[in-house]
Image: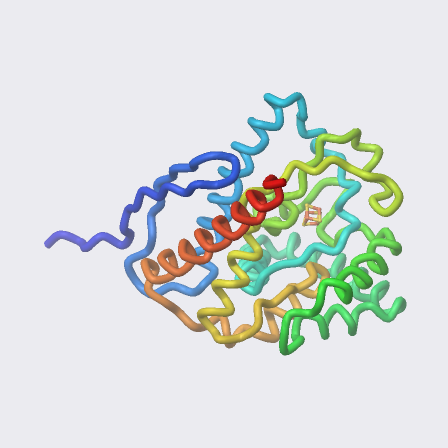
Length: 267
Ligand code: SF4
């Protein structure tokens, strides 16, 4: 007897501000949690960004980011709920000694944030009944950055969760001299834009799936948040339905951002 296929194959084409990306994806035929769609949407984001980087390089704007430069790893990194769950799963899949090192660094970061009165506010942020306003976020971002706390996942200026790092980390590229990133408040940098903001897309998907707010979960509290909301991550959807809905959110995001940039270029 033939075993039925466990995945379905799709060829996806997306028009982004950097050009068209086409990619083949395998989607589980059965019911899966939302974390199953995270790598796929990240791939769209990375492919679109690779196109953007190619254009920037043509225009002599080469990314100056490189391994060992982690100046931007002192900023507050926001995650969507699906990414927070995916990070929790990834950490649990690591060998015990690695998990222990991660937990120790997170505890250290928590102690420092508690002493600055920021831990509670970051935790409140990700449980807020609605998305906080930009000015509230801006104040918190600045306070956090002023501490110059290295990300709890940074070890000797190298990201220890590189393959599982949040989309916001993947999307932050600059072409300006690296030393300007040492003080992002007082220096200006030349960012290379990301055509798809993956955490926004995943946040909108989560909002639609669960009828809850688009969560903005700061990285230092992400594993705590994911643990406290594990029940929500027990829900499953058909793989094809998740893909369909995620693509719908990606298309909406792309069409809105392209219409905004067209408006900006009309004088
Ligand atoms: S997750 Fe990795 S890339 Fe992102 S801020 Fe932390 S150390 Fe840097």
